[in-house]
Amino acid sequence: MFSPLTPLDWKRRAVKYYPDKTAVIDDEKSFTYKEFAERADKLSEALYEAGIREGDHVAVMLPNTHYMLESFYGICQLGAVMVPINYRISSDDMEYIINHSDAKMLIVDEEFSKPIEEIEDKLSLERIILVHVDGFETKLKANDYEAFLKHAPVTTPPQVEIDENQLLTLNYTSGTTSKPKGVMLTHRGNYLNAANFMYHLGVNHDDVYLHTLPMFHANGWGGVWAITAAGGTHVCLRKVDPPKILSLFEREGITLLCGAPTVVNMLVNEPKAKEIEIETRPRMATAGAPPAAALIQKAQEILGLQMIHVYGLTETSPFILYNEWKKEFDQKSADEQAAIKARQGIELAFNGETKVIHPDGEEVAWDGEELGEIITRGNVVMEGYYKDPDRTAAAMKDGWFHTGDLAVTYPDGYIEIRDRAKDMIISGGENISSTEVEGVLYKHPDVLETAVIAVPDEKWGEVPKAVIVLHPDAQVTEAEIIEYCRSNMAHFKAPKQVEFVEELPKTATGKLQKFRLREMHWEGQKKVN
Image (cartoon, rainbow, N blue to C red; front, side, top):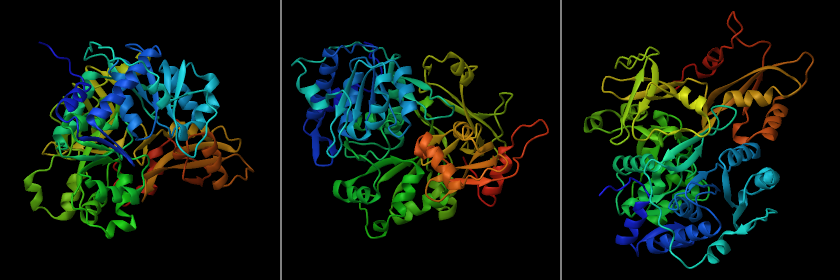
């Protein structure tokens, strides 16, 4: 009588009850749930014919298209493990992730295939499958995706008995350290995270969900599963394009979406935003960087978006907190409401326990003042870091996962982040390691010392700034430093500002004091991440 918890079962349910309903809209293409399931099953058949078996790893580097959605279901229902890859990272990181993950196959979008061309000979892949995109050409030795499906044998996918504790996806973090970490997420964890997504974002059968958030980010925060579970409609979005998003709001009747605060900022500052009236008043969940209260207020006033603040990490599938809205908040002023919505919030129904503690393990007072670290345990926490027991042990101590995020707890139990324990920079929802940027800068012949910090930015929330001490007589310029970084790492990680100084602030023992650098830039502003 036992039925394992796996989000894959929701595809079966959707086909059973909504076979003729539109499941996926991708520009001019659309698929019913029956058609979508047939394509996912065909992918499973093709993968099986190509030698992919239960437990094998398949890397996928695709934007938000129907191919990406098909991959989640087609790969995972074989009992294989999907490895979603961020197509914005450097080719070096791609090489590391593909090889470290033990991926046997890669499915890649032609537009983003150039970095793979550069490292193809270094990859331990058995096969590459290419999704063709008009206007792009590749030199990769690859099979065409549609031909791969077409030539699969006419059979039904092999039936695999899923253990809910086996891996569903292997998701790599984007840089808290110099090398990405492979986060092992299970069927059970994804199922319960998606249940949180459904319940707390109010997902229902009539929802039309816009995939603004990259699906490679913690499996679209669970949206790739939750919308199917409810029988809603997935609307794909290849890249963030504010005018197109606003047009889709009108044309497709979008009712729900997710995205980082930078996407919210792009939407409210799009000229068309003041010209349209969105009848559906979409619900929008935001996370990735704590949103400014003023930004939430603008989104609600200009676009009529119903903002929902959530919080989590890749290591927690990702949701562990959400900002629950209470009727009593309706009586507060617009400014007060926006300030409340900027808090990370309280535990979700299905994730487990989350709290803020002092270094001694005692919980902080619920006074909105005492600072501590957010820790969590329960149903959605990762199995660990792939092939990395040391970093797993460092993050998961005494039965709790330690997030590294510093926060306070208010008298009503709402948690609010105040700082990042490891000097993390979160720019437009992307994690940027300051030490990684510093590592690149230290390779420049003119750089003697450097510190990289987060500084406020109207568009991205915050961006990296490099504070540099040059070697004597060096003549390098700010523009040259920025271009050097952009040539040696992913562009979004490169510093947007550079300041040359004679010395960096340090303790008597020589330890760098980054907080003193940050204070100069955040004076008069509330630094929340």
